[in-house]
Image 1: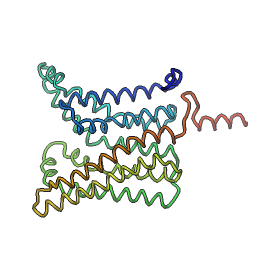
Image 2: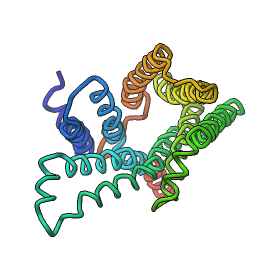
Image 3: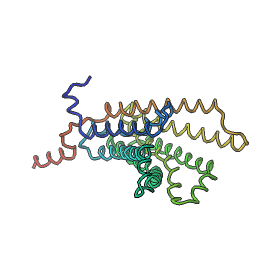
Image 4: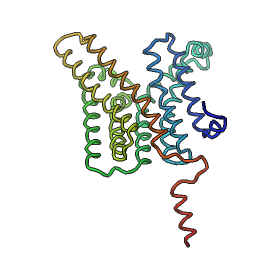
Length: 293
């Protein structure tokens, strides 16, 4: 158990992000109605970035790059919590009963869908900020890993557009068609994770490397599944294949749990810990220069 002094030493932003994650998880479960294993797993995956933000805020609360990264991980969680709160039966019923706010629920749905189409950009910025904080990419092997990430991301986007083309055509025919086109591009987040994998491998950050590698493994598994789904559809089969589906679900769960554990543990143990009131490296260098003069 942590001591009282250790708890007091935790930076305020870390507490805020942790509370945000807990509240978002509770609201997500309340909004879902029925609580099952899939709902709990989906809720954890939805709010987990808030705990990444808390870990980053704990490690280096004064560092600009990690503050940006923490905010980028936390913003989608905050939006999801607000939307879920407004869409719960109690709140939605109270809003619908008010004539002045009669259209608010429909607007919330629209805002939530619009944000979901671009929320992946926050993930890209957050992951790249962490990678830049760790250090530059210096080896050819590292850039080959980034190229692998590009291949995986592009392959996923192409498969999504080709497999679900009829559905996308119907959605694009409606309003905000550009948002529909942006959503499949979320698969390109694997490029940022590939960059983080390359950077952490160069510095032997085992846990962070494993966390980033799981994102590439998820992308590869998704490509295999989408390819099998497209093949069964082209052969006129129903595409259900319950055994294969269960196998991929099990693989997905294992990769997600591995990611949750290694990402948090890696941030706390492998990133440089800075005290809340300690100056940043560039400030120290400036002070050293001024003293030298």
